[in-house]
Length: 620
Image (cartoon, rainbow, N blue to C red; front, side, top):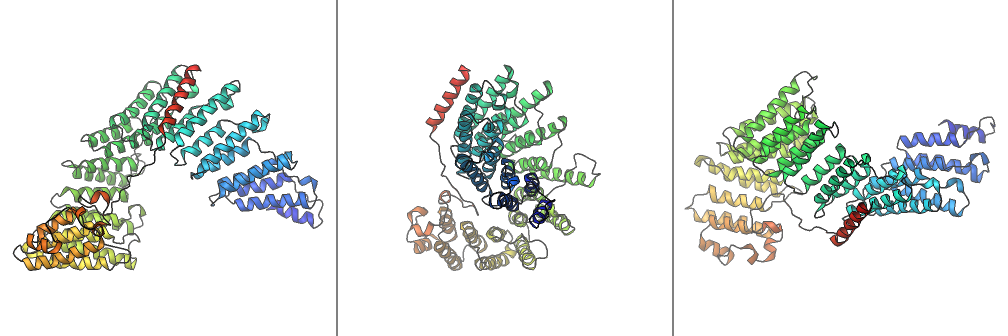
């Protein structure tokens, strides 16, 4: 860089070539914008060397270049970059306070950059550091330092630090900072730089929206209502915008609120947009509500999702891929008669549009998620011909991917759903076809001919067992049983892969369904092997015991277990050690895990905080 060349030439005696601090700052700024924080700091180090060690008084570093280097670290994705920015700030404070270097006194830009850097990292502990810096700014400002005047950026960054922290205290601390800002605004004779505005309130709303605290959605509703009231009373800086409403929609949708309330916020937006012209809903608004209906389990979900989808056009909002996928998901989750056919129709419409002229603004090309969702719908439907349809969809995905379309890259989920379609179909040849798809996955993964993310998992093998277990035709049962035990053996030899409770359930179903009822010895012999493997693996649950009891006679059951007991909790804990807590007395679900623990904040503090805030609002 020219300033460095200038320095080298100057040191070598070319006195007519003389860089200055502005030159160094320009180079550091270029490096900051490119994300190279380390080299930006090296430029600062070189400037300090010229001034402090070589005695060049024209090279005195100024706060500006320190701000530039701090900004470089703030923009850097390097581990520990936010803490490095904070260290430089603290060193500037020390040197300006104790070292007699007032030119290094941090200013508002310095603090704001560091606070924002800490906020964006979103790690535990950094929010407290960000808030501490804000309070340091406030103290310095009240001590007469006009150059460290906190502004809306300062407060917003500190609130955002809490919103992004994942800390259970986050929404309460965010509101405390908001209250502090309101106090500062009053004490500063209503300085506009410290006036809480819609962006500040949106960040507080975001803190509540991300919180898992009980009552967080209610608090979001209260804040939104308060913003609307104050706006109507003339405080236009409090006027809610699209971000405000979208944050409220997400908060209510994620908290399990009645989906009608979630949609109600969108309808409120539409009403304001149609009557006042503000708060136009965007794709985020519509998609969040469509997704809320999809997840609701309400039997109205598909029709409401499609209604909202159609409303996008009336509002001149272009549906995107997420919009289409959310509507398809609403149909699939509903399980209603004809839902799979409707999902197919939407997919066909997407494919038709994607083939048309790209100028069609509603043209959206299906992706892997779209295809996987439709495949799952068909598999779950049990409709005649479903396996053939899903294999046709899989072939389309494979062909398009091989032709360079990475957006439809089939994955393990895709293949598992296709196998599941065969397993649930009961059609002739289901078991060998499921096994062939497994073999295809193994070969493609091993050879790397298709994709690198279709490695079979425990669910793949278990679903093939399911296809075998529910073979309906007598002349196919021997082959299905042989496939089942071969596939189970393959599963047990795969590195890092283990059978689970559902696997053993399916294998016992193979013994129960595919062996003649009067062949007591063979049924007992195979069931005994399966159960003992299950017991050793620690996956015995009530459903396993029930399935075992239907497979073998009562006398054989007593011989194997010592009693007629079918409650797994009555047996040694070693038998059930790997069963998820909810699965000990329920049908096991492959791959599911549960975590019932939740951290809760002391709500007495919350109530006190909100009470104080309400009192202050009334007094204002």
